[in-house]
Image (cartoon, rainbow, N blue to C red; front, side, top):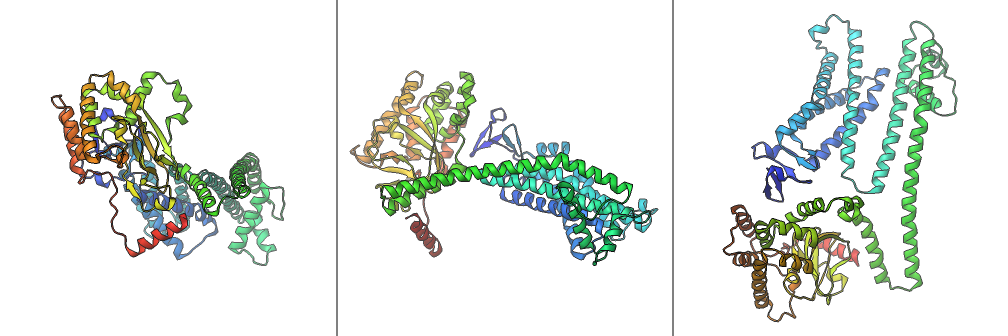
Length: 575
């Protein structure tokens, strides 16, 4: 089965964005790939991989240090634990989040399990060799050959670069800032170039050492010509300088002195010709894109400030305008992707779009008792309501959902973000206004009677995602269905209850009035005598049972001294 905001659907009803789980007692151990702990674990693995990328090639310089041994031991333990942790993290499959341990294990066994096991065994084997605990099948090798064999085996750890690269791609999916993504792209290319230069420098030094005992090499000449002799830091700097001269039109005193070094020099030159221009071109393109993006933002900001100055806008109003555009730039990163942003959706057949709208919008409406019963009685009518009557909108930070005196045209359902209700246009009152929960049904009265908004409903601290159910189109669909009599009965009961609560319909905050207990009672009366499935009745009872007060207001607890101070500072910054 699959869970969606506390609702359980059958496996064949799983849709994109859903979470597929089981009732196993081990299920709580499975982590989401986007969880904070898992992201921290993956980031630590990336750091360890960068450590290996830097220090494993430096094995050519015979670095011996206690902290290097500690780092190697930490790396070995981490990747061994990661072998176990990989069985306890979900993955994306066909748009859904797969959290079943059996599926996770099967996928891991098919992909990285055996390479990870081999690499972990190599890590522990190298650790045993370096600590004098030589396995029996390696006792025929002498100590010097054993150490060289251990160094070669340690280099195999760099194969994890392929796994870490895919991990970085996954982590990038959780970023929405174009500036950050561009910067990461630049850092990846620069890091690849630096790693390649670093690796070639260490390899060039290894080639020089291999020729010292048989013939003259560049390392003997360089150490003889230097005041530092064969200092490791000097030799590494010399190797690095030599590699950089092969990638750029520069020269130095170090040159190949034998055939092996000459062939290696030719290979490095060919590699630089093939790779360096491409990498440099990509970095330049990313920098230009980032510069153009920032230049356009700066130009718009200067034009806005010039407009405010030339029209002598007051300081208070000018700060509100500037603050809105700053919040808008941040809020655009968190805006939900709507259907209208994908032009190819217009090419889909009408039946496919209808099914798509039904799967996207229906789960949000099922948290209202009336629509849960309505869906159970006539699923085709519910699909038509979703297809013809509902649209999704984003209310940006600082914008109003409703204004006083505006005629209501439909009901809204908040999907993300926080809305607040204020009785004035004073911006300073927004901080102290009443907040609405996510999933609130706003202005339901517009579906059953004509209504003009009496209060202002606006966003609070960020954009808000809403669904808008158009009352006129909803009425047209209901009139053509077999459930029209139930809709009329619910509307009559709603009007009577609404009148008894507010008295004169010209007053009161009817735009945001919704009581879950009352909605359940009205729904059961309107659909009395209609066969309703046991699962739907159970779902509606759970809705009523989980809501203590039936209200959709956020109950704010008394704030402590630190929270009150933070709230006052935030209020001053808004002003």
